[in-house]
Image (tube, rainbow, N blue to C red; front, side):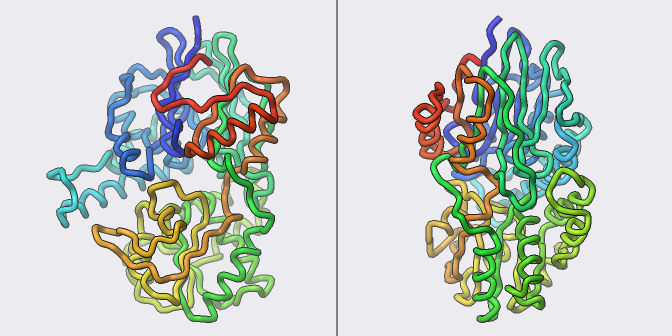
Amino acid sequence: MSVSITFLGGADTVTGSKYLVRQGDQCLMVDCGLFQGYKQLRLRNWTPLPIAPNTVNAVVLTHAHLDHSGYLPLLVKEGFTGRVYVSPGTQDLCKILLPDSGHIQEEDAAFANRHGLSKHTPALPLYSRQDALDCLPQIKTMGLGKIFEPIPGWKVTLSTAGHILGACSVLLEVAGRRIIFSGDLGRPDDSLMYPPDPPPVADTVLIESTYGDRQHPPEDLMAELGPALHRLAARGGVAVVPVFAVGRAQAVLHAIAQLKASGQVQRSLPVFLDSPMAVHTTHLFEKHMGEHRLTAKEAHALTHSAVMINSTDESRALSARHGPMVILSASGMATGGRVLHHLEQRAGDHRNMIILTGYQAPGTRGAKLANGDKSIRIHGHDVDVKAEVVQLQSASAHADADQLLNWLRSMPGRPDQVYVVHGDQKASDTLRGRIEHELDMRAMVPEHGSTWPS
């Protein structure tokens, strides 16, 4: 009986990764992500899946970022009762990210109701914090390199993908087919994470393409960040740094600590981490020694590299401080969370700085800032942007186009088919062309909702 893959997300876009593998009446979902960015993409989160959640046998997550895990509470709420298989690092991160996601959605709905910003009365969250907590008992950890069967006769093996703590590529063996899901691949030269493992032999490959049309610059994070912070301190400004709570927050903290230690940035420059999610994630680096490049001493130092802000009262007090200082706050694309309040307060002052630290999906506030927009909409009104906007080109946790090709090139043998996923249309199609012309492999960019043989 044939095996098929339905692309329920992460196709034609860089968010919402969901891949449904079917064979007969059995089906496995690889990744279960939220759509982010443009409103028309976010609205997909509210559209019922084309398959009843209670007919999905199991879920395997490549990693914990919300565009790969954030739909899980809703899947469970709507009837999924199976197991969710993850690496140990991913389980720990899901315990942090998913309840926080539900909490933010509840807060956003409450804000919309208070200020009449929704067409719906009342505005409701996609799911609640309690919904997220309810889904956590269904998560089961599996060690890397260990073969397990999420469905009888379906074999899965997880391997290191770099990118963030716990991130994996997934090898699925079913009905004589070998399918590899790259997940989000990290950079070989990442300052925190080890490089991705090379892919095993496979018949079908799904490869991400976030940076499928570009290369990272030769400069490292410290070389980019140091001069920016030096300018900021000289004019007494405040840097607001939207960060991904998992991965980039810790990379930026580590870089600032190194810059201070080398004398390139004043040791006295105050640094604040205003994100409970990022604070908790930072402490996980000590728990997961051996999964990243940091020594025990460096991992411990990371937890003391900034003033850790947890409560909303502490966050409000931070808003009253004057510069110079650096505030790291989630979310990384400025789509929600506490960073919006800091941007709302600080974006209008030319002495201040907004530092973007990673990929900015089209349609997000981060993308608008990167594109030079002089106004962004926050909490229902337009906020002038007079602060200097700096987009760090070396801070991404994703492999660039050459690195993606090198990962695929290292596969033993040649797959029958490569599906280029998890990228905007230009990035995905550019990578598709290079895979065909440089590696002589069959490649295509699947459309959202389409089904293809494995």
